[in-house]
Image (cartoon, rainbow, N blue to C red):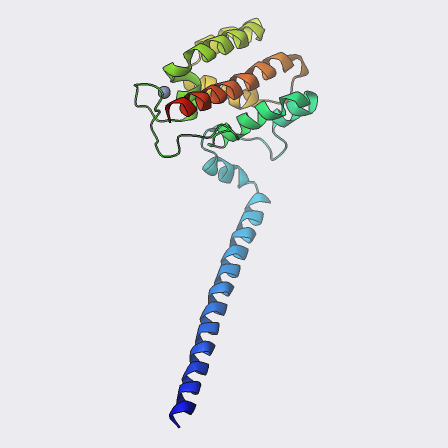
Length: 203
Ligand SMILES: [Zn+2]
């Protein structure tokens, strides 16, 4: 009798555990499905701009349409810029470029004494440790810009310069500007490359 009861208890316990596991997996599936449905429904509407702005931590200008970003059209025109452009896309998304990722344990830049946030603005325009690479590239970018753009670029704040360059001037592809696109892509890529080298030395 006692053995029968014990077997019955085991049977009920296994049944209950199976039910709990099934319920857990079902909730995961429903939750995931819900997120997918939410995402697809949002993307199919005009509110996708708001979603993009919500998750994109750098770009804060209105997005006119959901289409291939101008930077990828630059890559179509000049495939050798694939890696520099992918670095820009990573920075635009608030991440660090592939192969140049470092300093995950701290939000503060460890290369200079400013104790600033280790973000794209600091890396590309403020960090003193990267001054040499920055000066060379900014000088070259100004050099290849047309006169009007150069004058406007010089008057911009660092934040505005960051948005202006990372957004690919917030306009469509202009084949005449391929030299400027190239210089900007190489600037961002080389800055993060240099930063990674410096971090490898101190860590
Ligand atoms: Zn710094």
